[in-house]
Length: 425
Ligand code: SUG
Image (cartoon, rainbow, N blue to C red; front, side, top):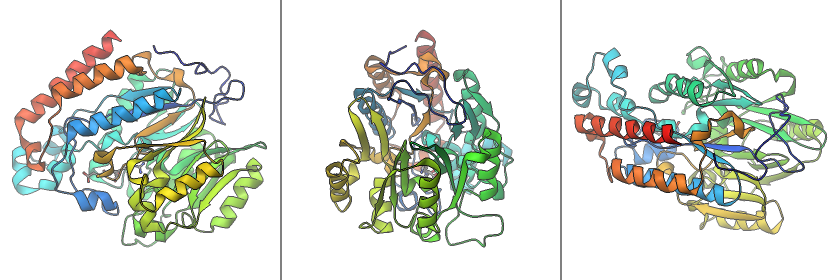
């Protein structure tokens, strides 16, 4: 298992959810790897990038390579990094339950074929919500293609995360829709900590133009199951943010430790929410961004950067799209004001085409030891995974190819070889 200077974290406070040694806190970044069927299905209403790119030819090899390159950047910063193998796709069982085969779905219901082949599981911020060593798997009840992920991820965690108490997803109903850590952030200040849960609606909220995926009832249930009800603060997403395409809160906010980067229109009653966070946690470094409108925030995905505390200070791993355009001056100002020490711009363009930026691709785990050693990465293992990707992933993929039996065979062979590789690590 690769070694990290301060990654062995004794005495994890399970309710605070953070392991600490000295003054440094290094959470594990657990990234999902896109699978060989990565495609642009246009499957997510309210997700601007998904809608714009739906139907376009995808580049599975580039997608996986870009995600591995991002993991390499995180490693270079001295932060522990692990990955989760892709789930088997296309999900023929899903189609069979609908009386379809891949071939008949291609004719009769192409969107169901796209759902069965979707590689959306790579966005692991939606895998579940974590506090300490407890994790509630997200039911992702809002969308058909994402709902398919929970059983596979549950099985993977049971296999690869022996140190985690993994709890089953909430019952699958849209009024109990739970989208995982994309709507949850642990904020910690000198006086205490707070689990910030953000929902889009409660069960009585009339539907808007775009789905509000996370419900208040789900957030409350997750807080109960994690045992953090007393430390939970529930905020509601600003309807204008959802309208603009912030289908998850992590499209307009990222927080870590005592730092919070947030768009000015992220939540309803935002001044009160920020005030309550400070009251509970003590002084916080809050960068509430005024000079990007919601459309610019969604286009750049600035707020979907990873905010990392590293041995070289605070680093923002921002999407390549922020290197220029209106987000760039904001990043430069964050550096100038000392909110971060530096920014790294990572090209994750294929993921971005489905509405997934750097932060969507990772789940944070406070204690790196809960994940099996074979999934922890170092540069040598990333080299090896790149070779594996190049051997098994197609350079390009049209949606119709999801019905190609050869693709299913290639995908199964790839996962099989990966399994053997992991067994040797
Ligand atoms: O759920 N996109 C994902 C993106 C998830 C981003 N995650 C976070 N914000 N944490 C979604 O909408 C697109 C699939 C398609 O259109 O093929 C998709 O599922």
